[in-house]
Length: 635
Image (cartoon, rainbow, N blue to C red; front, top):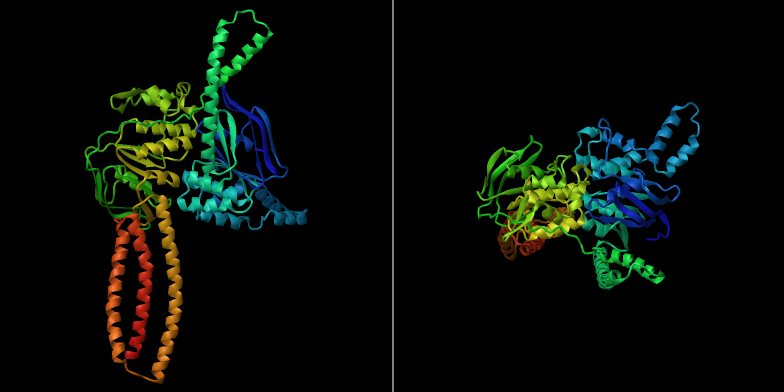
């Protein structure tokens, strides 16, 4: 990828870990204004490459050149801060150019004579250092971090990642390097970050599994595959199309090489030992051909065909359950729900609204304050949790699986050994002999998913399953869940994943307010945007009508003061008719509002009723206003 106005140029970069080559002689560049997404399977070196570019890790061969004076911001996948710092102190803790300049200025002001003050003032102005703290508070607030004096040690992993993200964005660097920036962000935060990164001439290199995020933010995709970098000049949708073309061309090349290889292999076997120069040249060409013929370009996939246990008609019933942590944090309030057979439910909501607590109540891990959960006798839960990733670091991958079962039932009389099963999860025979401590974060997540699915559950509960899983694994998991003969609950901030898997959603709005929406995430978001737009329009119309009504009432009072008159027969009839119509409209409005909150409407009916509601409001306002005018005359 040749960069026109290069911020970063990487040439012939090679990195090995022991005897394993992560990437070899890779070259690419990032130009001013380019937003680049990096895609690769787990364990192939994505985070390692970002570590190398940020200077945190060494490489074996090659050159990395940044433009002189380039300011680079780097978000690590797992950031670390001293635990005794406050949130605001953490924003000044990393030694970036702006915080160093602020410290330099403060030292100058404490030094007699203030040496070099004018130069510092000019530099402070140039780097926008005067409003650094204000920018920090603004971005932290967008990321739902409001207690600036809270100690870092008391933050959750997700809160800490958001503080680190804020720290990177505050300094407004020339080039942003982000490792999984959407992990631990709720949907509103992800959409805010999308808009932030698309603004202006921002330059970006990013690793993320969020495919909507990639599609909307990135203009170039880099794919790290088979120790090589492939470049696609387009968004994620363009990448999918062109990648398939690349694989088809490569497979055709391998097929042609295989045909020629068979001919050359026959020649090699018949050729006598004493060969001339031409024979030696042909022999060397044979070995090059052999390398191509033995390449395996076909997409290696996670094939999830695990048989699920039988599930009966009675699944579970949440019978008016309530849960709160003090008066200020209500999770559930008299929540009732009956789960249907083969239902696939998605759960969304802001962080802290109680999604994970709700899941733990269903599983019996947390007790409700009141109410009960009734579970069907045939239900066998498979629970993939955010905290469940716990392995013996000294165990081998194959032993982790064998501790659960030596053979896995695929249904239809088919079985797989533990070793064969792991190969379906992209753990090669060699990788299966690795110790757990050698696995990347994504490989551990993949192994954890494997241990959950192989136990033949018929009710899967997946709490943030997309964090740290690569896109290939996510695609196959989506297909598996769509065909899964059981029930599914997914808690996720991955919009693409939710759209592919769920058929309806619970929306946690906080303080026990839970809405059942009949549709996927995109349908919900479109409905929600329309609802918010309608509310804003109604507020504006209400203010306008209030002003108009005040003027009309004042004029009416003035007229009545000047000349009192009685209603005509026709006006009396109109007033009686208005009273009947207003009562009917109010009843219709009440019925629509109850239906919208019931969760029983189809998407089409929900849309139709949502459009009727504002029209109804306008009719009601108009008739009420006319009735008031007539009543003023009558009075």
